[in-house]
Image 1 (cartoon, each protein chain N blue to C red):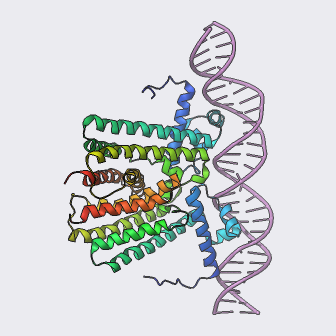
Image 2: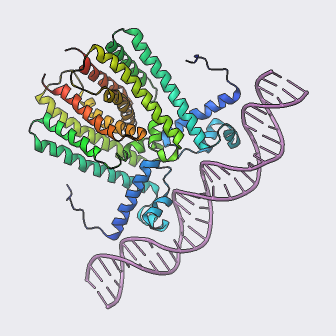
Image 3: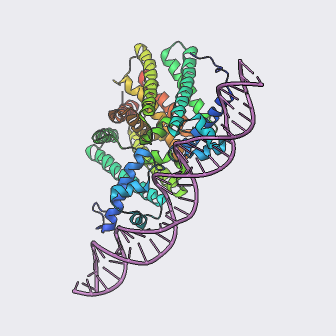
Amino acid sequence: MSTVLETPKGKGEATRERILEIAEAAVLAKGFGATSIEEVIAEAGLTKSGFFYHFRDKNALAREMVRRYVATNDRLFDEIFGRGQQLSDDPLQAFLISLKLLAETMADLPNGHPGCLIASICYQERLFDREIRDLTAQSVRDWNARFRTILDGIAAVYPPREPVDLDDVADMLSCIVDGAIIMSKTLNDPGRLERQIMLFRSLVKLMFAPN
Amino acid sequence: MSTVLETPKGKGEATRERILEIAEAAVLAKGFGATSIEEVIAEAGLTKSGFFYHFRDKNALAREMVRRYVATNDRLFDEIFGRGQQLSDDPLQAFLISLKLLAETMADLPNGHPGCLIASICYQERLFDREIRDLTAQSVRDWNARFRTILDGIAAVYPPREPVDLDDVADMLSCIVDGAIIMSKTLNDPGRLERQIMLFRSLVKLMFAPN
DNA sequence: GAGAAACCGTACCATGAGTACAGTTTTGGA
DNA sequence: TCCAAAACTGTACTCATGGTACGGTTTCTC
């Protein structure tokens, strides 16, 4: 869709990006409601006026944060699941490769996964307007649909053993990732996310691989 | 451990309980940072002085909320997984029954699952002191250990097909529940939680049931 | 070098956490 | 029935933060 190199950024665009990155880290650590604009601008090295030049209010900040987060994730998924299909013509093998890549990607994060912004927002829904909630909902639906399409391709070749609903299996991947992020963070054990994805991978094998 | 009927409550205990219940609902909807004491006391029908009579500060409120939440969940799990063992001597069947009961319990919640307090706190970790974070971590460990014990009993009778790590399988249940709660809330579709638990149940069958 | 973009400074208001402390009502037990 | 403790109320603060308003200044870009 878009070129790898974004359109040439003005100075303002860079500042915008810096604000969004700092704000996202803060939101994932303390929640949106507890993230003060003051601390964001302090870390970004600009004044309150500068902040409000870029974002109308806190809600506009949230909106752009979500857009950025979703776009980044979409790109990551494009890469990982595209790579799987490059490496194998067999749909099941391709998916298994992609899941392994996903697990490795998560394991390679230096301080563990910083958290899922959609989950963070979900647990503070009342703070956000309808537009943001629609954005998060649609992105989850899109991810589920992506996984579902892959599973359809697999099921066409390898009929599943147990009669499972493929929509539910597609949902399950998102659930496991989000759940494992929470467990990793709560237990302060980043490795669990990788392990859960690999377990899901084993179960996919169990579901579809011929006996 | 404790009797079903709690020790007779004074009037203060009832107020305390009311505050905790209102606060929990608010925290699950907007996050801890965005939950004001003012609104809690407004709904509870008492003054700020009254609130600080019961709780030293907001952190004390959080601590008691977590304790209450964990205790309630422990009781629920005792009931559900105890009932499963009552209904079948076979460890696998007992677990499958319990999972069905769990799914039904979640489906019977009037407005969907209100949210997991541990997940909510996880996404606002910086707001809480070490004691609270230790509390949440320990409760997750306890729940995982509970599931692990059950799985050990099953594996002793039905050796699993694919070589899966039982610790990971035990973790997976927690992950799926927490992840499915987020998905249910984000998509405004309470049914997904029940479906995910039932899918996990199918996968447990696939893992352990003799071919 | 002019105009727009990207800021800075200052002053201000409203809200909410939290403190302090004196006073009042309610409750349970001797 | 009375008394002391428990369970509050009322008032009056301080401080931090979100957000608004607006005029001035620097910096980039054509």
